[in-house]
Image 1 (cartoon, rainbow, N blue to C red):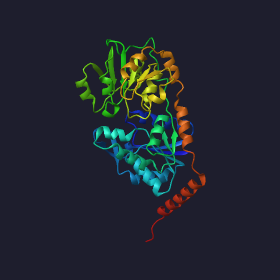
Image 2 (image 1 turned 45 degrees about the vertical axis):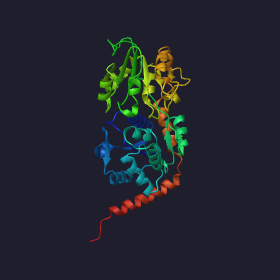
Image 3 (image 1 turned 135 degrees about the horizontal axis):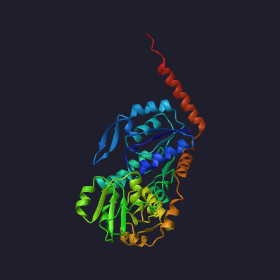
Image 4 (image 1 turned 90 degrees about the horizontal axis):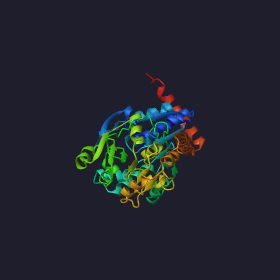
Length: 364
């Protein structure tokens, strides 16, 4: 198929949404699909207020119209609810073209954590945005159930994968990136921002050393407030994989993620994961022998982290090997297929006729 993906999250951004989309697109291309990506780096942008690393596209509507016409997609997926997603959604509705969407971030909670905006307003916007979607893809059953309680419909599963070649247990010939730090090493990796709830990790009473890998708007504040926590900044590629592989326990305190891709990356490195009883950890950890779930949604995280020290790292790695990016991409493609072919054919025939009319020279 010719598949068009419209997203506000794309490279050079570094986060779980971008990793999910880039890997899914790469796998779909390897499967033989032709994939066109519309992303902010193709437009003029302005920085997101309170988080300048994220760029918002400006004036995207008309260029996106032209991209639709030139590519003639057979399936359209709108991955995010920002300016690119809004413009693509508008084109689909105006041209009566079916599309799918996905729910990557608990947007209402994210906004409420940063701005004085009530949760109800955030959920009203999200329901408005996703309502015309033929299918809204979510990563976990817990997230599906939560969204259904908020009145969302047409929800389908779209799981995640992990690169088990990049993320692997530390080998005997590899140096210890935490040499000189007191063991055990309790690790967190991700954007250092209020919505990631990293302070809940930083304040834990744990033996050894707490390490945060990542950067973001809250880093300076947390570094000053928690001098016993080691902040090493953002890491990429093999260096990031080494920080996973050399850790003893991964602690995931976020309450706003819908999955938490770093959970699988830690497990692929053989590092057990402690997390709150929230979407993501609640779907991955129970029964996995690869982590320990906290007793509550906001407490019990330190006890869970300590309990992880007793888990078998070989079993942790074995659990992560069940997740592949190919199966993730195959599930994504299956979710694109509920639409009647005749409807798509009539649409594109009409669109091509309009395009031919526009190209005709005007009479003198």
